[in-house]
Length: 176
Ligand code: SF4
Ligand code: SF4
Image (cartoon, rainbow, N blue to C red):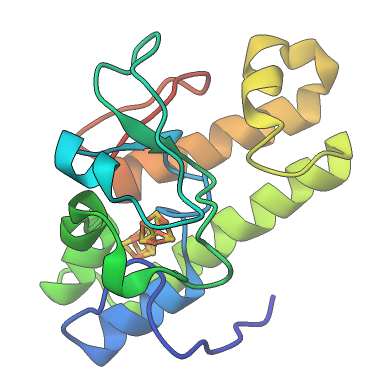
């Protein structure tokens, strides 16, 4: 898989070249890989930049939010200067590890690439794009067992390296 260099990080301007480079390659906190929605405050909901749309609390969601995959994500954040507070402060565990020098950039990039390759494999096996196929596959593994096993491997990587402190259910509507 090739990594095209984009002009800025997808979710945040990071402090180091290495961490910005990691976000440029990744985008999992914007494209629906890690989360189903992003919670926002009432104040932010009143001035959410287009094309983001406020959704009311529902099911597990107890706060106003906008859904992911983010409508403002197009290989980069297209509303960067107006992005909500949750986006501004979010840093996944892998990014923190790279910034702390606890994980080498090459190792982190390899984890990102592995997840991307497995997502692509799920899309090929099911004929449906990731993450849209995720909930259906989790609810009905028999739909494609190979794809389901690959989804479990993706979720293991996401839990271990990105979410870490918050293990996920593959069918859950994860939030930042
Ligand atoms: S607004 Fe969307 S694209 Fe921008 S940082 Fe937040 S989740 Fe990512
Ligand atoms: S999931 Fe982590 S590494 Fe990926 S774009 Fe978001 S903050 Fe950056």
